[in-house]
Image (cartoon, rainbow, N blue to C red):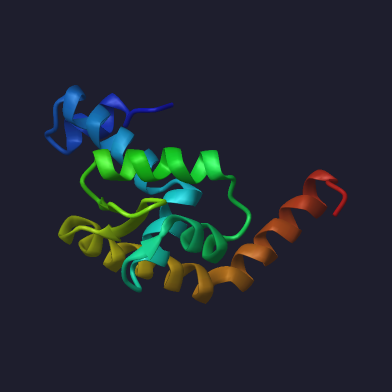
Length: 132
């Protein structure tokens, strides 16, 4: 489930290790919180609590762990200002800013196709007898 199938790897002339790495990275950047964090940081540097407020329904622990993972992947940088209390600000790296393009394209595709998706869900639910 966490990797691209062997047939797709062979067709793309990629090793199983490369496919596994791609799959893991897509899981990271395709995660709900990661997309929201990257999108929010696309407006510029933000302090932790302000980032949490802008994102909304995210726990402090979830935001912290996602920021650490995004920092580890080179998408987000963390700047600590030595004040009392310390101020921590997050911003996208160059690599993170490059990610904004496909994230924006995905958001646009979703907006353009939301009516079709809702119609497909409604048809499916009616066909299999799922209550709304």
